[in-house]
Amino acid sequence: MAHVKKNDEVIVLTGKYAEKRGKVLEVDRKKNRVTVDGVNIVKRHMKARPPRFPQGTIVEKALPIHISNVMLVCPKCGKPTRPAVMIDSDKARHRVCRKCREEF
Image (cartoon, rainbow, N blue to C red):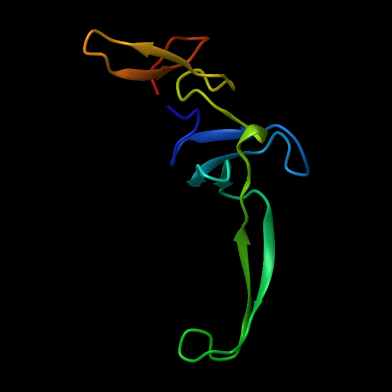
């Protein structure tokens, strides 16, 4: 079970965007990278290609950062936490906040 999944809210721990919160847009498990909304934004110059880009344009997009540089934020208490894994009676695994015991 991964510590972050798509649509989780995370906080960035290091780098230029440290302490910025955002929603996970994409997770790449093979490369251990996550794309977070509003973090690691770059500008790409797009060549004119009608009909999508009739004149050419500059597009801003979020590039992935390493998964170890983000920490999950609990939706209930709003604090960054490393999730605990609880196993229920049906042998199903659930991520749980270590601080308030709320399930993600």
